[in-house]
Image (cartoon, rainbow over all chains, first blue to last red):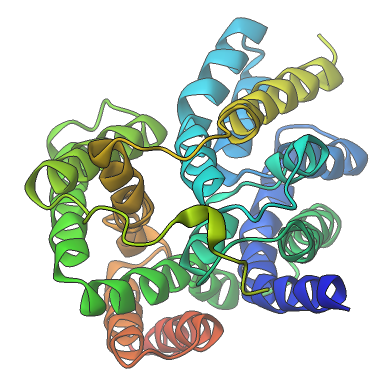
Amino acid sequence: MNRIRSFKRGAADGFPICLGYLSVSFGIGLLAMKAGMTVVQAVILSLTNLTSAGQAAGIGIIAAGGTLLETALTQFVINLRYALMGLSLSQKLDKSFGTPQRLLVSYGITDEVFGVSSAFEGKLRPEYMYGMILVATAGWVGGTLLGALAGEALPASVTNALGIMLYGMFIAIIIPAAKKDHKVFCVILIAVGFSLLFHYAMPFITSGFAVIICALLAAVAGAVLFPVPDEEKDPETEEGVL
Amino acid sequence: MSVWIYILVMAAVTYLIRMLPFTLIRGKVRSRFFRSLLYYIPYAVLAAMTFPSIFYSTGNTVTAVVGTAVALLLAWYRMPLIVVALAAAGAAFVTGFFV
């Protein structure tokens, strides 16, 4: 029963991600069709990649007839942040996470899944992650399908406004944490400062790469200025909440 | 070149990036510096991804700024994720009628 409860909790926590993904992947679907891809290709692209910035860049390369090396390098740079996120998540996994579970859950490490699961209080169980990733993926793939099929069915006033949802979710994750821990607040300010600097003063650095640099600079600053206290309790005895 | 080969390359690179650290790092990280780094990274990543991108997320800076303000306010009062996200979109949508 515990497993089912974890799964349901994950699915519930994944629901806002699913809604947010619908609007973004709708745009991905549109983009893929404009690039001359078929509906099936657009859907399979979303199902196998599950990444907004990476897919958007990849579709651009496909449309321009770029090389496979360029495709691989672009994905590597834009998606490198997932390596950091995976590393961070690997520290809060429940003991029931073996290699097969890790191989499965790896598939679904996205910005939003990472954001929500790293805000989760307690250890992460595989079933919780399965539930969240399943619901989120359904939104991502379903939105791509709708976008590819329906074209511009929704008025632009609606799709434009929906574009802010994912960022609204990010804000809902970082602000309460910043309120609780002033050190987190400082790190967020540093990250935003660097991000603004990169965006406006160094626009030639691609956004995926800029995120990696800004996040590392801010996190290193945080680790140097405000190191976390030594572990007060043995993590091995800490049980997962769900 | 077939579109399928591009899709395959993209999927393979993206999966490996996600899978390798998540699967290979088993032990607890003992270094205090590294633990601090991992503690701060999620917030740093999300903050850097949100700003300034959020200001361009609706296709109009004014509606986006209004949506951002609503999101910040509701997040400050610890509203659930979906409430903050939908209210931001709603605020941007309504503002769209006035700009």
